[in-house]
Length: 519
Image (cartoon, rainbow, N blue to C red):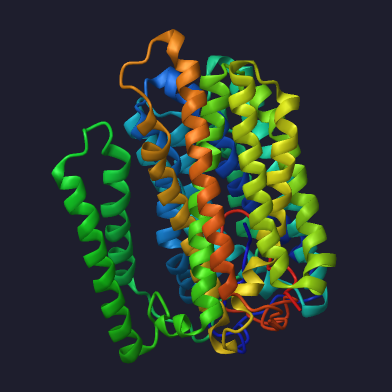
C-alpha cells in the first residue's frame, strides 16, 4: 500500500508557496501526518473488531462485509475528485472539510444504533477520507522546499510502518478493554479528540495553496464508476443470503454495460476538455495496463485474506481480539523488513524478478498456512502461525514497495499524476471487490444452519477454502507481472518529491510517498 503523489500538472508551480523559513510548516507537517495516520489506523483497526461488532449488534454476514467494503468503495470513488477539489478550491480548505467530516463520521460510527447506521456512517467516513487524504502530500509539497522533502517523505515511511503494526493492536486493546462499557465503539470514538485537534490546529498552521491550472471535475465519470461497482459488489455480498436471485445476475451483467459506457464517456470527455476522470491513453502503455491489472487483483487478494483471517481466529478458533492482534505482529514486521530490503538492495539488482519472487513467496506462505490449519485444526497455536505469516509478509513486502514505480516507469511525464491517482483508485476498488467475494469464497462454503459445536470446524474449513482462492489469485498476479518492465528506469517525476505540486489525483489510504523506483 502506498501514498503516491498524484499531480496532474507537475511542471507548474503553486500560486502560493509557504516561506521556507517559516517554522509553522513543521506544525503543519505534524497535523497532516496525524491525519494520514488516523486514516491508516482506521482502515486496519476495524478488521480486528468485526467479530465483536457482529456479535454485539447481530450484524448479518453481508453487513459486516459492507462495514469494510463500503469504506473502501467510497474512498476509491472519491480519490481523484477529492484531489481535484483541493487544486480548485484550496488544499487547506478541502483538507479541513475532509478531517472535519471524517471526525463527524467517526462519531456517527461510534454512536451507531444498528448495523445499517454503522454501514452508512462508514460509507460517509470513506467519502470524507477521499477529501482529506489526497491533500496531505499536496500540502507537504506546497509547504516544504525541495531540499527538505526527502526527509519529510522518510517520516511518512515511519508513520506507515507504525500504522501497520499499531492499528490491529490498538483495535484489539480498545475492543477487549471495553472502555466505559462501550464494547467496540472506542475504535471509532478515539478519532474525535485527534480530529478536533487537527481541525483547530490545521486552520491556524496550514498554509493555503491552489493549483494554477487545475483540471475540471468529472462528476459524471464518478457517478458511472460508483454505479458500475455497486451493481457488481452489491449482488455479490447479498447473493448468498437471498439464495442468488435472478436480479443479482442481471445486475452483475449490467455493471459491464455501465463500465463500457464509462469508457465511451471518458474518451469523449478527454477529446472535449482534456480533464477525464480516467486518462484512457495511459492503457496504451503495456507496463501501465499490466500494472493496473496487478494492483486491482492484488487488492482483491488482500480484501479476501484480511477479513477471513480475523473471522477465522476470533470466531472459528474463539480467540480474543488481543490474541488475534498479537498473532499478526510477525506479519507486519515481515512486511516492513522485506519492503526496505526490496527497495534498497534487491530491486536495483534484479528488477521485476523481485516482485515475481514476492508473489510466489506469498503463494508459498498461503499454502503453508492451509497445511497448518488442516493439520492442527482448532488446536492451532499463535506460534505455529508465525512461520506462514512471516513468509506471506515477506512476499508482500517484496511487492508493495516497488510496485507503483514499476507501473509508472514508462508512463509519459505529463501523465504521471493521473496515472498515480488511478493506481491508488483501482487498488481500493479491488479491495472492495475482494471483500464482496468473501460471501462466495468463505461464507459460501458454510451451511446456513450452524450449531455451536459446528461453528469452529466450519470456519476452519472455510478459511482453508478462501486461502486456496488467495493462492490462485497470487499465481495470476505472478503471470500478470510479466507485463512489467524487466528493469524499468527510475521514473523521475516525483520520485524524490521535487516535482509534481498539483495533486489532482489523490492518494491511497495506507502508505508512503512513492518508494524509490526500479532501476
